[in-house]
Figure 1 (cartoon, rainbow, N blue to C red):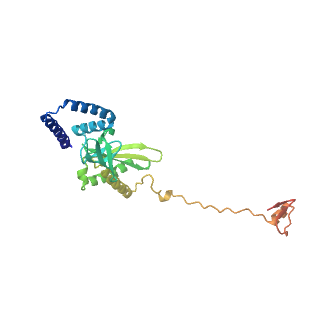
Figure 2 (cartoon, rainbow, N blue to C red):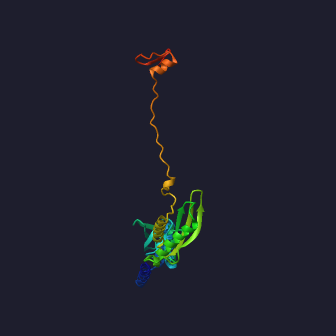
Figure 3 (spheres, one colour):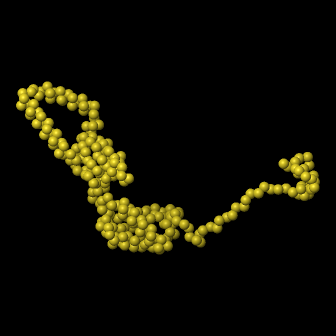
Length: 255
């Protein structure tokens, strides 16, 4: 990109020098170019904004090809950085063309370090010391294996209770990781913590209840219409137990 800008400046200067060598008056040409530039500037303000934003992004080295960034309007891996447009490849493989003038803020996930955070939600009746012990054991085993020993830049820490409710409590776990590797570390950490909790008999919120806590299903009786017999009506009075057809009660009938 810098090569393209340098080539444009060199070719432009060479063209002006050639025109001057042929005794061509450049004053009217430059004046016309100035007027045209002002008109184009008013008509293409967004284009000028995109170019200026792209120039400052390159000079300040805000991001480069291969970096994982969050540009607000889109996020992903930087594929190409241009003066007007930046190309990003999303998580699903799509290509985003983001105008540099539309980028109001940008977060570079490939600089410095990242943080992997996992929330473990268990029942409030669980022993907190036991939960901490299981999580710590799973995290230490993960830190000793490849490739997680390189991606983890610090110990996995149990920060404590992040939330306490009537039916659950949430334990926050965090660790410092390589840039751009936080998501993979979080997935592996969840996998190992879940497996360790299952082996320790600690139930997370949302699982199946314990066998002693399961309620026996109640059987519902099918609804049946209430039938009246002739002898019942005869006992009340007004009915004939030997009569056929609709039941007669006094002067009325049940149909």
